[in-house]
Image (cartoon, rainbow, N blue to C red; front, side, top):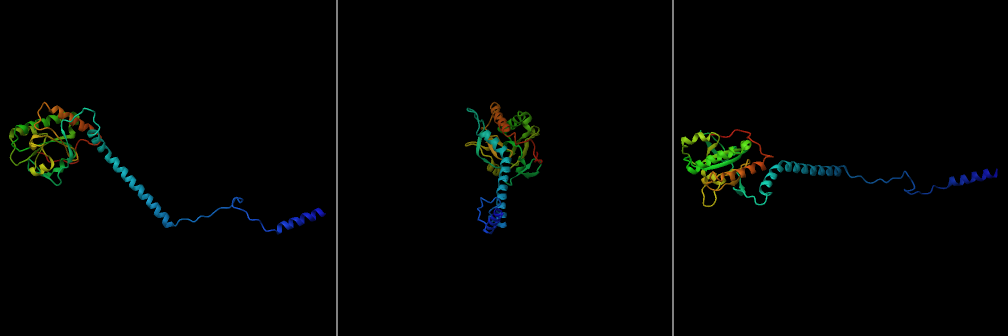
Length: 255
């Protein structure tokens, strides 16, 4: 039994020894506890991230809304085939419609000028007596609008009458489709300006749907050169087709 006594003695000796220290790598159940951030710091960080995300989303929405307008003007003003020239003179910088300006219809009804916004405008300016240049412009305005075909509903032709005199009776029938309003000459001068050496009545003016005067056709345009003006109008309407639609939200003052 000596072998049994020897084994018991060896087991008793091993059991009486203290366990040896083990490293974390040697123990599969060992782990390290790190300090956790405070609840306040975590919330502040989350709020900051949410705020940054919200700002980027807002900027993205604004860019999406403005993109069609920016693209159409970029196409018209910048991306032009070589050798292409405008007949009308582009106005830089554009002139915004005067704020709080009022106009008066021929029946005496007054309304704000900005009711004309929402459509492209082909504008003439002249006293009520309407001389030969004025009558030629009114004819060209009507013909140019009609020549636009299905796109004509996106453009109005406007006569700004610059005094209070009565209109000649014989021209009234031809103004059935026009917007004719009286406006103060000082207000008109803030918005529409002639070329050097010319008068306001010498030109036709193009105004975009946001009320910006952006083009002026050469003085005393005749019927032969009107075809060149039509090409400019076609380009403008084509370049803005993605964001400009026919009609206004509200009625405007009419003759």
